[in-house]
Amino acid sequence: MSDPGPGIRRILVVEDDYLLALDLQDNLADAGALVVGPVGTLAQALERIRAEAHLDGAILDVNLGGEQAYPAADLLAERGVPFVFTTGYGASAMPERFSHVTRFEKPVSVAAIRQALAGLFAR
Image (cartoon, rainbow, N blue to C red; front, side):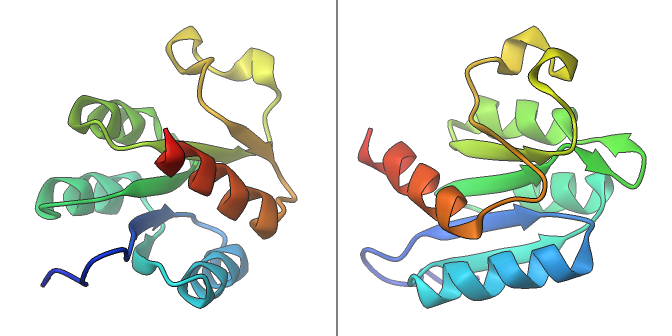
């Protein structure tokens, strides 16, 4: 995929809930982001992360059809790509290595996710 231009953020959306994925995609696009995906499985997420030369951030649903998204989170962390989680799980269910990652409990506020990503980009 070509470079979207200066100032445009490439955001990977990994979400298996079709309606939420579309809502995230639409809201991020409205904010000027270039949405990569959305994808709904761990295999697709790993494939996209490996295939993309550059990602500015990601939104990861923790549970993808019964598979945990942690391998995708590990790969994003290795590449230095900031990300947030969406989940129906409480904080105690998250692995310790991700305790510092912003987590949004479902149902999520898309506006809050956009604000959190903006904060990550400001760092």
